[in-house]
Length: 347
Image (cartoon, rainbow, N blue to C red; front, side, top):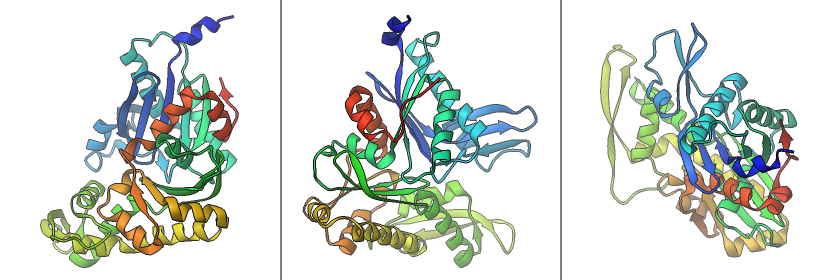
């Protein structure tokens, strides 16, 4: 009866990540790329800030304001806050497009591999409650592969590693399906925790999460660098309780994170060990593709290549691979039906 409204309906692709949420609008591209952080006033239960503004508040709020990440390891850990965060982003898209009064959007959203039916349903319900009309869920490695224009429909083995904030997703893709896969919680956030622990153990210095992340970005590396780089590490001295600054270099950061990096490499090896030999032959020839924010760590491709002895490439614009894949699926209905892990959840 109201099918004519469909031509006015906004269609969205969402990468709901532990660290960042990205939103793709059909016909416009990626319009939102903000941290998955929400600031809540516990006295009034009101959302004070979302995204960049909320991340600036991390570790700096009075007791009645809590900054929270509603996703843990790619899974919704606080349903109510996740729903409000999604509603904020969807409303922001509508306002920016001048279509705030129009019908509810159709959404394609990425989810980690190997999650339970309950966890998958939580993602779908959160998006529906946030204002969507229809939700399709696609596994993140598949979305990333589509976003990077890999031949996912062909009988060819494609090995992709999506290194995010909360999870590292490893998958072998062939004939529009994931043949073998693994999701581990050793990812960007774990590397931050490694740096915090190293600063505590070696320097008796207590770091904040944002400071650890900045150190990882500025001086972190997976292999030895030609030139040493340093960065000031600032925190609270655990012995005196006073502020202190220590210079930290790439070798020390590498020492802090190397155990987690080896866990990632071992997980990729374990997937290759259970992959059918014909697909392994394709992977040996075609190599491995890395996407996600973790791929920006200096030398991560060299570390994996040395361990696996296959070609390793870092994707172009790796941060947006998943959300670009959801955007492609908005245009290709047949492919969406092939790769989605659910039928459309409707409101």
